[in-house]
Image 1 (cartoon, helix red, strand yellow):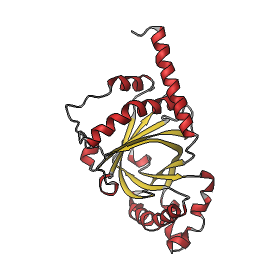
Image 2 (cartoon, one colour; image 1 turned 120 degrees about the vertical axis):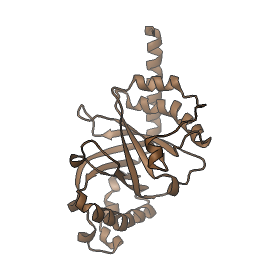
Image 3 (cartoon, helix red, strand yellow; image 1 turned 45 degrees about the vertical axis):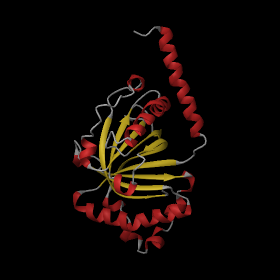
Image 4 (cartoon, one colour; image 1 turned 90 degrees about the vertical axis):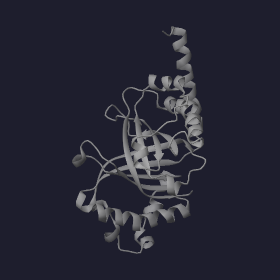
Length: 261
């Protein structure tokens, strides 16, 4: 059992890690937008066609213009209430969120078709939208993103100390998963985490996100760990101690990505 002194030390570590994270965030002003969409089954093919044919071109031009650094379309794999939940997720990262208009003004000129033939709002419903700040990233030394980043396991965390949870993951999980991936002791190919900037409140069930990337759906569903691996149990205990409830997780297939890398 921890004494009050011991608890105070742990709290200090948690809060201090949060201060370090805040300092980093001040130097990186990029904003990532997660937009969740619901697309009816009979409109999926046209939705994907328009996004991957036309909107990916808009994203490519934005990346060249340095008004966007990342664009991705992800397709959810399974759910517990499929008729009433989102089935697609857009992830867009902007170096300056106030210049989003520069990306989406007159997209038809870039795509080469009338706007009516490329828009997807009429084919889908936006169910929610979040502003995210990406924090940490690790990938396997031998990873080839175009070949190896095919499925993403999104893990949703809820805590009273989001900056501290991110900091603890950086201190304990980041170096562990990097070594495991580099040594091929896991089929996982990359890992990252992020903090939710907005919205927030009691009705929002998560405020940090982590993501595991895999080559196959089989690996995403049932990742095999080398039995010789020693997990950072001390750090995992600290992380678990500040999480409020069980994590949520969803697997997505990577449909299309445009990025600076």
